[in-house]
Amino acid sequence: MNPQALDLTNKLTQFHEYWAPRTITEFNGHDVMVVKICGDFTWHSHADTDDFFFVLQGTMFIDLPDDVVVQINPGQIFVVPRGVPHRPRAPEEVHLLLIEPSGTPNSGDIATAAPRRWL
Amino acid sequence: MNPQALDLTNKLTQFHEYWAPRTITEFNGHDVMVVKICGDFTWHSHADTDDFFFVLQGTMFIDLPDDVVVQINPGQIFVVPRGVPHRPRAPEEVHLLLIEPSGTPNSGDIATAAPRRWL
Image (cartoon, rainbow over all chains, first blue to last red; front, side, top):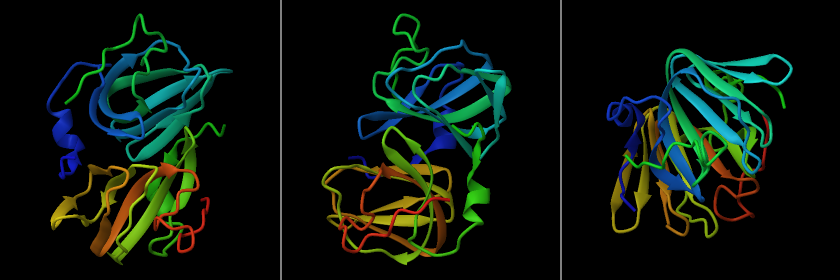
C-alpha cells in the first residue's frame, strides 16, 4: 500500500489521449480509472458489469435505448446497469472517474478495447 | 433504472448528521454513498472489503498502523486495503463519496454500524 492520496486533477495532467482510461488504483477487483473523452463513442453494453461514470469536468451525455438521453455535469454520477446498451458522448472535452472490474473491455468487446494502462 | 444523473452536492444538502452514510445508487453489489463526517471515528478494519474514500469537500485524515497518516483533500481518493486497521478523522466537516459492498458495517462491526439509508 502506498499511503498517499491520489489527486485526480494531477493524474489528468499526465496524459492527453481521448478514450484511453488510466488506472490509478484498485478497489475490490475493480480498476479505478481517470479518462478524457471527446466526441461520440460506440454503442455497446457490458453483460457482466454495471458501468460507473462520475464527471469531474465538462458535460457529457449517455444515449440509452428509446431515445433516452442522460446529461451528466461535473459532480454528478450515473450508473448504467449491466446489459443496457449505451453510447457515451461529449461534444467538448470531459474528464471522468470510471470504475470497472479489472479487465473489462471499455468498448464491450475485447477486440476493440483500450489496453489497461496504469498511471 | 432512473435515467437521471445524481448530483452529489444536491444529495448532501438533504441531511446533516455526521457518520450516517446515505446510499444514492448501487454498482456491482456495492452501495455508492455520500456522508458528512466531523471528529474522530473509531479504529476498525474490514476483513472482506477494501474501503474507498473520495473527498468532495474539506480535508480529512486516515490514521494507519505505525503512526502513518494519510491526508485527503478535495478531489483526492484513497483506498484502504482490506484487513488494514484505520481511523478516519476530520478536524472540520468533510463531505465524502464512499463505495462499499452493500451491507458492509461502516464501523467494521454490525453491532455498532450505521443503518443502511437511501436518499
